[in-house]
Image (cartoon, rainbow, N blue to C red; front, side):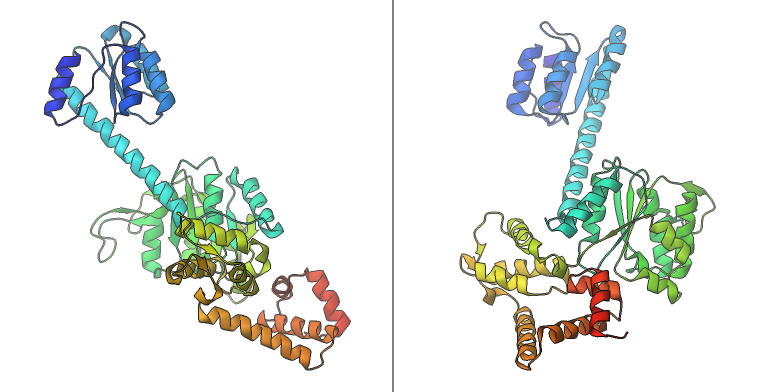
Length: 435
């Protein structure tokens, strides 16, 4: 049997290694790390089930086709439960097993591609980095909500890591081995967004030359990320509301009702309460999305995390650790207020690694805009001090500026200043500041 299979499969272009005993086969598999194994159920020393168990111990993903006789089909089914890819009964034609081999190798390739794409997905979105109290709170919320099927709304300024948090929720959920599908709700016009979310039938509109599944359908049993959901047109908000309520929809141009089991995570960097008040966002949709709310803090309010983030990006862009960052450069980074948040910090570090020709990154390797901003902030503070401001007057001035910069939103102004809202209200009353 070994000789016949080796001869036939070698002619097909496969490199074949054979063993006629179970223990010998295990040793050969460990030594050669084959792409797949054809394994007889009955062998002189140990049977195929024991060999299969050993193979799966050191390589759980290896495809295995079991060869069995008619009387041992139940045992072959047992092998499938342990992890065998397929089985074939004797006597069989060579063409039959050739087809099974191709199918098993194709399936193995697909699994490798899926694992690669999952790794790419993780690299694209990154991971949560930070030990500040604000980030500890975010991490705890992610852990608490992950195991539920609850809809989650993640808010925060652009670049704060909302998409990263969404992926972390998916990875920690019981849907982790199912699809994670993201769609940018602000990047597409209304008709294309509807097609992107729900799919379309052939001929549904100009250019619809074939049937297409939408993101909700592709995300079935998994998670869908509605990125920048606050930018969604009102007509689409109505359709999304129906999906959240009934878990079903029709493709554009279709009549078939499609039912899905999808966990929804929405992100936005706009103030949805304000959007509701000006009529650009539906209140009922807001409450459907905001079952669990996670607010991602801006980087300026978690500056103690900057060294950790810097080292994370150095590891990412310079894995061989050819360059390090000087203490003066690190101090410079912590003095900047980061309007672009973590995304801006990542870009600054990537750029610094490119322009730095020495072994140590210095402040001179940072963009001029960043250095000028720090200088302007420092000069402004010095000017206030030199103008004879008392500490109380300086504090009052900062509070007024914070309110102006945040459209008199007390909660945002308090976050900007790094204090609680009750503390801000106390200071407003103390200094007689009228809104």
